[in-house]
Structures are given as C-alpha cells and as structure tokens.
Image (cartoon, rainbow, N blue to C red; front, side, top):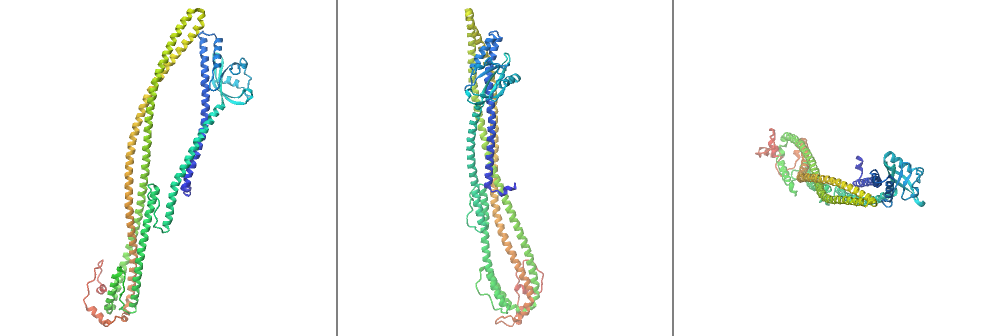
Length: 617
C-alpha cells in the first residue's frame, strides 16, 4: 500500500467515493437481474395458481361423476362451460387439450374446438401444443414458452403458459400470460431503482465533497503555516488550534513547535547580546593586555562596563595593581605559575568532558520526553476515537431495543387480528352448518315433488357438499390459527429476552465509555506536564552547552598561560609601573609582607612551591 503515500488525502477520499459509486452500480445491476428473475417466477406462479383453480373445477365435476350424480358427458360439458367463462388478469383465459392433441375447449378461438392441434405451430414455427402435451404427460405440470401471433396480423408477442394434466379424463388444462407484462413490471422497477440510485449518487457526491473539503482545507492551512514557521515566522497564530479533532491535535502540536521556536529566537537574541558584551569586554581587555604586553602596567580599566562584567573590571584592576607589586618576584614564582596552569588546564579539561556528558544526557532526556509526549498524545487520540465508537455502539443498541419493542407491539396486534379471524371462521362454520340444514330441507322437498324436483335435488346435494367442504376448511383454518397464536406468544417472549440482553449491553458499554473518557483526560494532563518538563530540559541543555564552550576557552587560556610564563619572566624588567619603587625592591617588599589567605578551592590540592603567591594573584 505504499503507492497511497503519493496520493493526497482529497484524492483518496474521491477514490473511496468512486469505489462506492461503482459498488452501487454493481448492486443495482445485480438487483435488476434478480428482480427480472423474481418477477418471471412470480408471473409463473400466478399462472400456476390460476391453473390450479381451473383444475379444482375439473376435480369437482369428476368427483360428481364418480359419485354417480352426473354422467361423464354432462360433467365434462359443465366443466368446460365453467372453465371457459373463467378469466384472470386483464383478459387471460384457459383452454383445454387432450392427450391426443385435440382441442377440447378454447373460449377465444372456438373454431379450433374438436380439431387436432398436433400440427399447429406458433409464430416461430415451433409445435407448442405438442410441447404442452409432452410436458403434462412427462411432468404432470410445467411451463411452456412460445411465440404468439396476435389476431388480425397485429404482431408477435412472447407468451408463457402453464399446463397441468388431468389424468381421469385425459385432459390438459392450460393458460398463459404475455412476456411483455413481465417486462413492463421489470422496466417499472428498473426506473424506480435508477431514480433511487441517482438520489444516492448525488447525496454521496455531496458528502464526499463536504468531507474532503472539511479535511483538506484545514490541512492546507496548517501546511502553509508550517512552511512559514520553518521560514522564521513565529508571530502568526496557528490555524485550527481550537478544534477538538485530529486536525486540532496537529495544530496543538504545531503550536508547541511555534512556542519552542519563539523561545529559541529569544534565547538566541539574549545570547547575541551576551556575546556582544563579551566581545566588547574581550576587546577592552585585549587593548589593556596589549598595553601590558608593551610593559605598561598603569593602564587600568576606567571606562564603564556592563554590570555582569563589573567584577571582571575590578578584578583586572586589582590584578594589575598586584602585578605591579609582584612583578619583582615573578621570576621566582614562574615555576609555581606553570604548575598551577597545568592543573587548571587538567581541571578545565575534566570539567569540559563532564559538561559535554551532561549536555548529551540532557539532549537524550529531552528526546525521550518528546517521545513520551507523542505517545501520550497518540494514546489520548486513540481514547477519543474509542469514546466515539462506544457512543455509536450505545446508539446502535438503543435502536435495536426500539426495534424489539416495535416487533413486540406488532406481534401483539397480529395476535389481536388472529382472534378476530377466529370469530370470522366461527361465523363461516355456522353459516356452513345452516347451509347444510337448508340443503337437507331442500332435498326433502325435492323428494316430495317427485320427478319434477329431481334437478332441484341435484342442486341441493351440491350445496350440501359445498357446505361440508366449507366446514372442513373452517376447521383446518381454526387449527392453523391456533398454532399461529401459540407461535406469536413464543416470539413475543423471545423478543422481550432480546430487549433485556440489549439493556445489559447498553449498561456495560456506558461504563466502558466513562472509563475511556477518564483515561483520555489523564493522558492529556500528563502530556501537558511532560511538555513543560521538556521545555525546561531544553533550556538546561542550552545553558550546559554554553558552559562547555566557556570551559573549553578557560582550558585553552590556562595552557597558553603556562607557555607564556617563561616569556613573562624575561619581559618583567621592561614593565612600566609608574612612580613605584624599583621592581626588585618592590618584589622583595611584597615577599616580606604577610600574604592574605587564599580563597577556598573547589577541591583539595597538594602543596606546591609559590602557592601563596598564585592565590594572591
């Protein structure tokens, strides 16, 4: 996934949006294909149900024949009449063939009745009636597709027929629907899907643009501010520092860099001022020392110097005065000075090494604190994200509980409806019973009427049979309804248990949410404290490095001093000390005078020749 490093965040978001659009298109195409298949099956099922209704009529009249209440010819004629008058859909009808391919009944084309359809072909030249008889004979029932030529030469349309064999009479009952009805339904569904997809695409595009701009614009502003900060602009504010998201965290980190850069600028300015003062003092001391190198020991520092170097001026003047007093004994003290210079150089070198070691340790400490600060910030960010995830989980669980409550209410309403249906079934059962009673009375009256009431007796028997079937169906419906009510009670109990479990989950997730919020607050507090410590360590590191440089300078000066001792001894005779006594006389007087006690040294040093003179110097 390294190639993503070369792609901007905005382009990545557009890639995600484009991928979503492609996925949406694929889903729509699959949905259309599935819809076409489902609607085709639905129309086939509709034709099957219609044929089953016609088949029930054949079954009924065949039962009347078997019961002896009708002759076969009468039963078949009645069945053809009933089925020929049946319609479904807009104008769909039924027709009947026999197993010898003879057209038994055709309500639309009565001229074909009694004729063989064996050689008949559809608009494509296929023997579709043969196929219908074959499917009915081999499978008992099935679907046959063929091309139907409309009457009057109005064109050709695809048609789907469902056929079913009625074996007692050797008939095949069939019906069909035009394929264009299926295609019209599919096209209507495709238009609706396309409109929904267009709305989703527009919403997705707007969302991607909005999210992309909400990320790329603040990032662009922060990037520009980073460049200006790298160019030295520490005064301008950091954009987005008040945000609470990841961009706000980046702005906060950049604000720390800006403050550090500003502190660095101030420190460099202070160092530059200190360097300027030091350079002036060095220049002044250089001039005075140059005069001293020429032998003029009367060139004391009388000009004003910065307060920090006031003691240096006083010490220089005192040293100059002491030098005038001690120049006489300088030759005798040269060896002691040389030894002392060597020790000072060694001590300075040791101090320099320790100072450098301290500087390195401080630098490592600063880096470690920075890493710890970064990790704490990352941990705080991760905790914030986790808080968001737990909040979303609570919302989802609450939605699930609402859905479970709605499902319980819906099941209770279904149970109430089922009780109403039971009442209706009971009424139907009573009506069927009364119908049987009336049929029995009618049969009795027909018997009394003799030959004239025979037809009425047949009708009474049929009504009685229908009433018995109605009672049986009512009984079966009541049993099925009782089972359904029991299942609904079980389902309601299960949904209530699910709701209780979701309530427990909500409580647990809320506790996790509160704990993670506390962790995030603690991490931010620790990050702030570590940032302050890192700033202080950085200042200490800077000061330590300055001290190391000064120690190096002191060490170099001590080494140079040891080399110049012998030269100073040779040049002592040419020093100018003003109106003082001769050099050697003053030297002897200075040697005879009591010496002041030397200042306490930082560490014990072995006794050496001329130590008192060096301490006084």
